[in-house]
Length: 174
Image (spheres, rainbow, N blue to C red):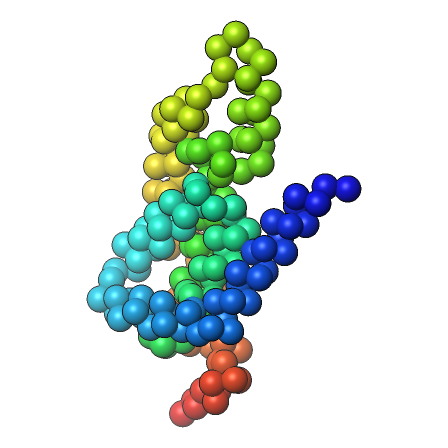
């Protein structure tokens, strides 16, 4: 049994719990929520995707999602926007880890196995081969989440009742 995967998922859940219990998700969410009303939808999607993509290059995708999705949920609640409009691009962007060997387990395996070759792969090889793909994925992801998010998930709808935080006193709809 591979305990590495178990530790990866457990660590991500611990980070998520720490963010929520300490209130860090709300503090970061409040800071980010101030930017939401001033940003165009596509630009906001692009910024979220780029930030989450950069985080996923260094941290695991699971850890990035576990840390950032509660922050975006708190931002959506503070700005009174549909959480899906912020969390959908972030969830998709966690899969855009193409730049570094540490980004995904398959990249680590490729780097380790390449050490047996006459010319082993270097981090620079990963970076330069992954850069065009990462840039294209960020642009395409932002465009598709902006254009298709409201069609498929109704992400541009008003703040939904299911997104109210019961622990914070809930929401009041008029």
